[in-house]
Amino acid sequence: AQSVTQPDIHITVSEGASLELRCNYSYGATPYLFWYVQSPGQGLQLLLKYFSGDTLVQGIKGFEAEFKRSQSSFNLRKPSVHWSDAAEYFCAVGRPGDYKLSFGAGTTVTVRA
Amino acid sequence: DADVTQTPRNRITKTGKRIMLECSQTKGHDRMYWYRQDPGLGLRLIYYSFDVKDINKGEISDGYSVSRQAQAKFSLSLESAIPNQTALYFCATSDLRTGTGELFFGEGSRLTVL
Image 1 (cartoon, rainbow over the protein chains, first blue to last red):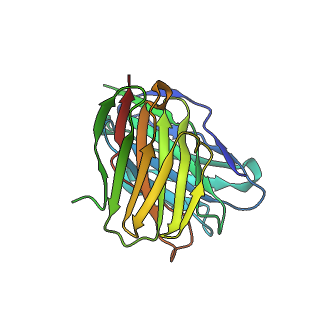
Image 2 (spheres, each protein chain N blue to C red; image 1 turned 90 degrees about the horizontal axis):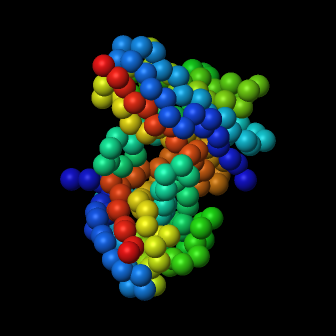
């Protein structure tokens, strides 16, 4: 079965600074990869996804992520964070044809003024 | 209106009580899931259903049961609630036609068992 590790439990970043959230997965072949965001009191919203092709994917709200097969990573980045980016972020991995996702433990992002 | 609707959104109950969380969807997806979220553990899969006649256990199904009443409805039951089932529960759907497993979530049901 696939697994996902998000090494950072909590990250604090200043408004306007860049943000990078790490995600490492364990799976033998190329997985389907996702980043979801959960704002306080809300459900999970898809930020971006990777299935195949270009390894740099663009998502909503100015986020991007890069798939690196050699490092089994799918890190999320944003060049300049806004206070509204304060949330919990989850990386998820799925196997083609399996239709079940495994989630990381999540990274909480705090944005300071 | 939300595409995936969960009721109730919040529930406080006592140990030993039977609880049902309901989920309905208007997305027309055939696949439905129940996940549980706990701080520091992310989301863990409780049960999933690929169609009305198909029910499958996830990684943490003990203490839970489900019913797929129709393509659009998937309910989760706790027959005898216990305090360590206090958590945030999410229903999700996915579309067989995409083949990717991308999930669409409801807004969650927060359950507290005293």
